[in-house]
Image 1 (cartoon, rainbow, N blue to C red):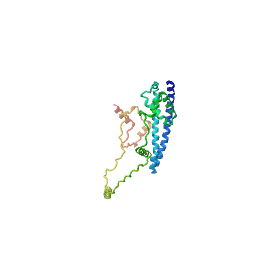
Image 2: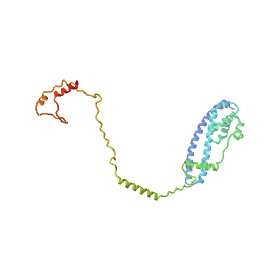
Image 3: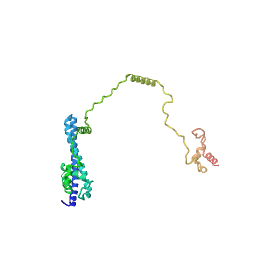
Image 4: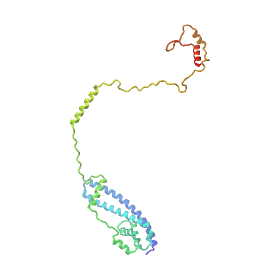
Length: 276
């Protein structure tokens, strides 16, 4: 028998290779399973129920195999993480289920790396341990089973639901009948005509309609100078033209309201009086 350290080293390498191979096989099985399910949906849609029930067993076995590969992958990861417990000459109770399951299932798979793991485990724990695992004498490994009719029908119903196939056929629901109520509709139509006639004959009130949107605000005094004051009124002197115009008789300027416009001298006197 090879030394335990040598077997553990080889076992680590084969466990890593087995994990990678099992993942690739699972991806391939999932792609094939999708194609088979699509074909089953076509058979159900075309009414070939018996043929679909026979062929769906292949899908069931494929799903069981995929699940087995997942379990074996988990067992390989468990042994890879706990290789320190495998240094002892006897199998640790916490690893016994994983070790016996790999020894039992490896010949039933197409993964060659798992078969190398099985050989190393048999060399590590001896022939008696390997024989007990192969015979499953303690019932630690579960065996396969045939597809039950309930499982077959369940698979077909799930495939039909996924791909939108009406199977099993369901009776169509009868559409509810709607009765046309003629008399109430006629009464409503007559009432509407009477209301339109009354509105057409009515006269609108005088103040009907929107008010004018225009608004004229009164002028407001300047905020800068509320009481403006004219400066320099004492220095204001009439020009020669203004004196000549005032000296001519009969020439009077009328303001916009009426009366005469005072001359410059009179304005100067008024401003002087206001200043006092």
